[in-house]
Image 1 (cartoon, one colour):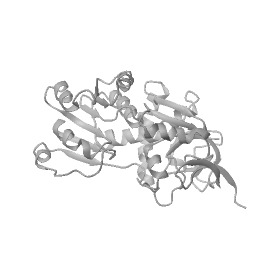
Image 2 (cartoon, helix red, strand yellow):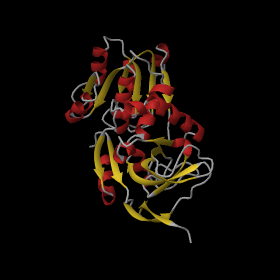
Image 3 (cartoon, helix red, strand yellow):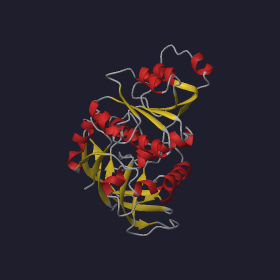
Image 4 (tube, one colour):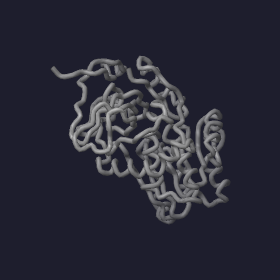
Length: 328
């Protein structure tokens, strides 16, 4: 009989519940992790509605990240021992008691970090790191505009950009979020409900515009983004919360300013690219996190049975930073 575990499943009404599911097996080159905590992402909201399928071969269980303790080390998973504390990016399977992961994706965590803090790191920090540095080539002294800066990715991006020496302009939707992002040392924080972010960006950059935009919004911000990008600016598009179709696009302004349009998704990257990304992030950013110079921003922590309430809070866009769920 196949060994079982507890995992978070979806019923016919698209509500989440904890039930029995086959426990993953630890293969060669893998680590079996006893999951202590996982964290919410907007992809989770889409997946439970059947709007975002996991990559081929990935667990159908929701959850893109987790933190826990190694319970079993597979053959050829060198450098790891039972009892090591880790966090990791997942293509799926985070809302469960156990996860089997390629050893290359494991990030070692010290006792300085709690499992709650560690669970809030992988998805948002690796997304921000991939887009700003590996794809966008952000440099010290450049101006970066970070939309939805109070989100998980946004709070990570603000801190990473500041650590790299960039000038950070952030947009948020409430005064409470303005205060939160100012505490992360963003240079300028704009409540887009109170003022035009286009006007504010051009004022703060003396009419030059920004070198890079980190945008999870998409279509509804297209025209405004084009107005505030500097010559040779880079638009990093990693989400389409504001739609995916832009009507009547005039490409000439982008061509005249030599705008680079870069799109990405992290979940579907091949294992070798995720492994290389993880290694680069661990070398550059994890020492800053371990020293407390950068930190995962935790909005709230939820018990397992509160998972639907947690999803509802994210759907209302009330969170500032990461929402973490304790696994039973």
